[in-house]
Length: 383
Image (cartoon, rainbow, N blue to C red; front, side):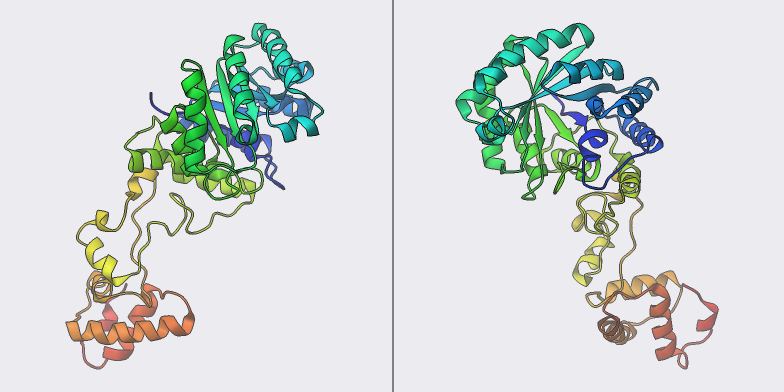
């Protein structure tokens, strides 16, 4: 089965500290996600109040191609609010670890009893009901297995295993999911992980390999604390590292990533995997010499695949003759091997002094300074 993505940028993503999306922001994000082919969106938390209900309903009524889901705590009032919001489905989250059950004043018996009651209560109102095992990564295996089995028996369409505090690693994720899958072979399993230890993408892949076919992600990994698994990273990692293509239109990733970064006021790291501004940019002379012959020698992802243009090479401390020759040839300027070596020495000095790469214009200035008296009509050329 192809990976099934459930995007929660509008719910868990907006729960990031200090992040607030306007309704127009949400509509644009939803439209971009729809354009990317995401099949299901967790649109929000109706229990937040009338304004949230209105915004969720507005998105639900816009005719997008994805299914819509509301997030609820394990109580009937939250489910009623979700009904008012008009989503196709409802997600009901239960604490399953001892530490969360104690903090919320619940017991294992209460969880199982209300699991049955709330599924039964919700089904007449929604097309489907999904159940969340909150803090599954710290739950006792016996109780977690009982919880998933009960949810399946009571008619839940999907169970979400949540690594609520980002504790898992790929090995423990695989073990957790495969253990549950060995007991419950039919119910859809969803993985929802956090990135506190920097392993959210890897853990999501491990969960998929172990039998969780539904992947909860956000654009840019936006989410509480260190965030969630990033949709664009998971999709590309599945395809390029594991040979498992998704149904998502990856060409839309750059536009989507840039827009969410803008409206969340969370600037992307230049080196953020997949959509960072410099992740397809090269400076090393050893690399550029090969890249000029075949871009795939030192670049895993083609720019076109993620909606970018191929980037030109940076000129700096680590550049080689091939980069210098590339830019001078582009400017139709004469350049021998000796010229390249002399220019390269000056480029490295300049980059060291400036503590950055240099621009094409700065390279031309260096060239003119060195050779203005030796070559004719140089000033008629431009970069």
